[in-house]
Image (cartoon, rainbow, N blue to C red; front, side, top):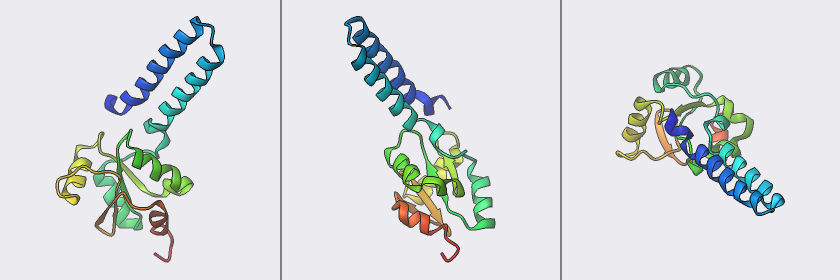
Length: 145
């Protein structure tokens, strides 16, 4: 789990250090702007913006019951962040699996991607879709799909 927080912590620590140096030089406004930017980047790259992850077995079980897609992701992945943000509230309807927290999830992604750990990988009706368009994923949630 520590691995998921390394990039956000790097943003906070480096942003704080640089902002501290700017404060000593008297550039309060620049320091504040830099610190806010670092905190925003840390937040966007943290696991907190994603719905609660579950194990791959639980996600597949739930998907078999309700027909909703399973999304495999990892923290710090800009394509995963793009998918999550563009899905908005409908992201909560999907079953999310963090491949850094679930080795079986990473293995499932590799099995569906010819050995590659490419994320986001969305499983719909047993078929993997690598880095799909968020609009398409949203369509998979509609009752008519």
